[in-house]
Image: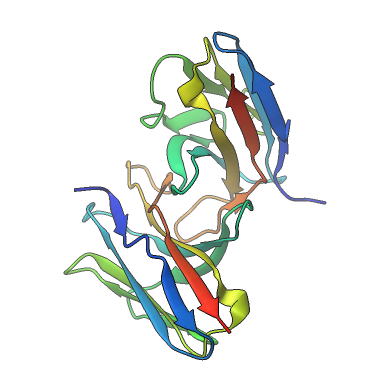
Length: 113
Length: 114
């Protein structure tokens, strides 16, 4: 099983729709979870951290299910500018506190007018 | 700007040559990460530094790859005897360290081995 798995898509979604992605991770000891966004030929940038209680930032909602080891991202009222690749990120938990991050391959989202 | 800086932005080298890629992290960031990314893939972990020491180098693919961070700031990724399969974008990121801290990425070095 890969460390972080995502459906690569592409997800083609009409503007204004709601879209959701899931991601699964294999390391049950992981403690930190994130969604990053990457635009074409650009570097990844943090979209939001994912907390056990779930968290919301405007149109974006992230949830964590530790028992099933998956993370989700929900985008409501999607905009054309949401078109990007969304990367699921989990800490490697190599021991000793903060450590490297493992990225999924990303889910490609295309918002259509 | 005060972001993560990587040089060069592009590097073309011949198969078998040695290359060095440089990363200047954000000032004060103790954690530094190297990744490489091929087209259509997510960033692949290579190595993570906490201060001057490599806390996790398990992602380095083989002994042709080596990275240093001698003063706990600038880092250099070194690739010996380059192969065509090494062609990728090499990304560097830095963070304050600690759980749930944001990692900030540089714009990457696009390495092409011909």
